[in-house]
Image (cartoon, rainbow, N blue to C red; front, side, top):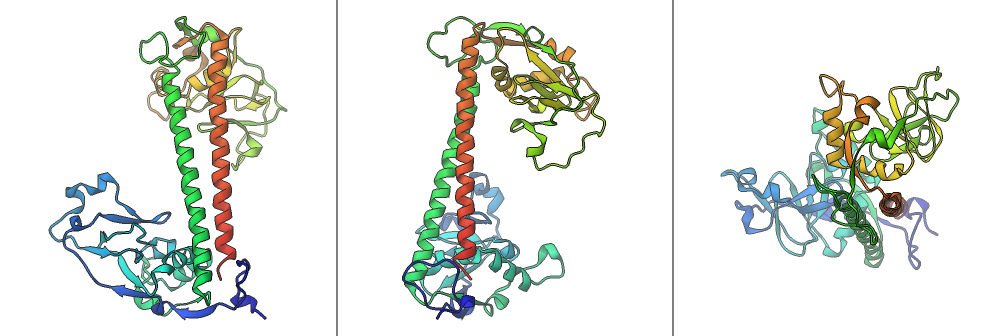
Length: 401
């Protein structure tokens, strides 16, 4: 019968034997080899999230990394690299590039008794329980400079599967999850880049009268209009309405749905009413993009400005327009105040700002609908990525001891 203390909660079928205890000195062996010139091999670094990764281009400039007394260590394929200062936070990894790389001489390099185990131990060391063990043995007089030295590391004991087959299955499963996370991150970044490009190309640039990209059937020039001709200020109060918040990244949200401390006044008699389809913005942060289309009815602080669309104006279209850099720049230069801490854009100044708008509300709605669909795709991609990350976190908790 398996001992629960020596058998993880989640295992592959066919494996039931207890895990065996081993010292890390039996698994990792410290190496001292160094090279005086990193150019012999590509220069790599360590990150907490991704382990051993190529240095970015800006770090590869010779005046930043190459000094006469610089020492770099060679890391062979599958060997471990650790940052002793940040080891307890997860700053370690193994060389999975398939060729020799160079790393800072400050890092520690370890060979491993079996190359097939590198991925297994990398995942094992990333578990919350392992990181806590590393934190407990870290030494140093200052908290922020506590190190995990090999002299301490080598005496630590870990339980491992009794067979190489189980190690490989665990390692491969987690590698597959990492590959999936990488693909999902790439997909998300492409969608975000696509949205940035669409915001640039689906609205006129500079003094252009038409955008670079348009939907079929729309050919007329966009007309210059003041925002005051597109929106009226809503000045109604509604003290008992649902409290709404205006965010820079996500537009208008119910305050109850946000993980924020409620610092609103108990007396909400002067709080402004917001109707579905209105645009509300933070008067002091409009130039930073703190505005949004409201899908809800509710109330906002009297420090905010609420505008309602005039006939022929689609407020969702404007909500996207208001996030563009050239438009937020207009909000910035029209804000009033001596310093950025006191800049504010009240409705009178807002109403005088001139933008280009298509006369046909159908074109406005087409653009808004397309961008809204992109936002939904981005949201689903973010949720998908978060779900996979949670799945990996759960596996790290249940597939190791």
